[in-house]
Image (cartoon, rainbow, N blue to C red):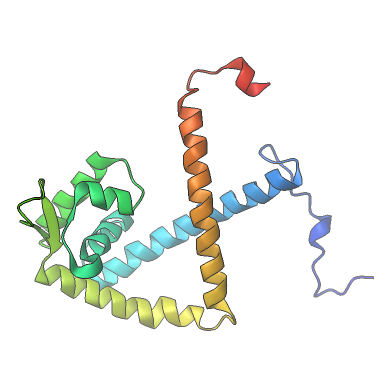
Length: 187
């Protein structure tokens, strides 16, 4: 007889329309975890930035603001997109305009050998970022300190997610070349 405190995970049928084999189940469970993690991360970004700024900033707004501030070096839109693995440049440009209206970033000139427009954080933008960093340390980082071995686990998770990013990118490229259903691809 099984102890009430021990959960028998083998009794659960983990198959569904996306997964019937052990590998498919593992990938699907990772993807489902990604969905949930992304939504939770997005909520944290929105609430953390709201608390730090008093402004209505989306998760994307906060991410772009932090990327622009990264390494205290101005960034162009192409670099911002690359660092966030985004190819929706129109949406990045929209966020840039919004952050400029909020006076959190500004256009800047850089080395004359470089063409294009670059952005840097303003003093107000750095104040928001500093407050966000403080809040992040007091809330998010502190919560992770309760988990033994968390640094190693997060490092491993980051490596797996980076690897999966490359795999998803390659799969997306192949799928993009077969946008119209090709019967031989589904055989």
